[in-house]
Image (cartoon, rainbow, N blue to C red):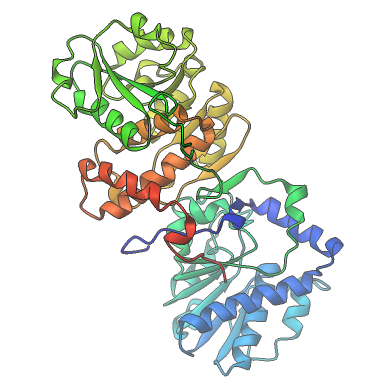
Length: 489
């Protein structure tokens, strides 16, 4: 686990995520595009060896090699480290299939072979886990799990053995790696928890895979970072109405939630922000002077067509949400649905159709759609398809799905963002970006990324009031080159 928090970084040209099946298709297409399998394997093994040499001093290395391509990468890495004077031995779980690329790599290994067992792993200073790759088809246990458990330090090839590259879930057992080296494009499992933590530092290596394979595969999953979306830019003629009007429904009791959403909408660039107080608006008028407070009836407010974007749910109460929701839908407004909305329509997700963006946390998602289960990407995609809305499942590895099947995984958020009111801020930020003309999926992705970055800038120990001033700073540094180096070699 990274401590202190170090966000994963991405270059704008490598945001696509490939499932293990899609990566397998890429491998199969490469020879037809002029890059042979053994060449890719040599490059992959070089990337692993290079990443180790950059970070560590020579030490006793044991390569645990599986029978497939993952093991082949391990044999190449073993040979290259040995060529540089590192003491290396290889333990094979099983021999590669005769005639395969891995068999060719194994045949070029002339160094010592040893037993595949925990005793040998415990003797090594470093274990290279080249047993199973991201496309794991069965649970890991027995001798593999025991041997990896005995290792002092692990570098994983592609993913730690036992980690499902598609879902980030553990199949049986998986030992955490200090470093994971993967190739061409990340898999969803590198970003989804617990996979992200199990991978340790993650390095993405260019191994010469032709980029043209992406034109055939057409990936539908992405790492969420600048380059996936573009924030709205102000024109010289911009004014408060062209920047959009956000209206936040405000409940009678938990007034702080609506105030936070409204403040976030202002920080994220909305030209006008109103809290529509249901009942007496006195408690809201003690807030920031730049937020408009109205206690006019909802039908009256909906007569103003300039009020295009609404936030429904934060601090509203289930009963009020149930009453207001159909009125907003009937008026054809763009709505960000959050918080109490999912209690209001628990077990009836089709009632949420008509929203622009829905932002449940895991408990709220389960209330409305059922428990997301192990494959959370599939669950969020299904929810987006069912509601015809962008669905953002909040968490340390936020997942954003569009009705057309696109998915983004956000890794910008530190653990201290998990504080009361943070979700209200996110809802307000999304609404502000919608009001400025961003498409719903882009707005949700951009807001999730900037929300996480604002928390990093606020620092550990922040409370939600510390988060709001940092939203502007996060927006100003949105160029990826302003905040870190890419993860690839």
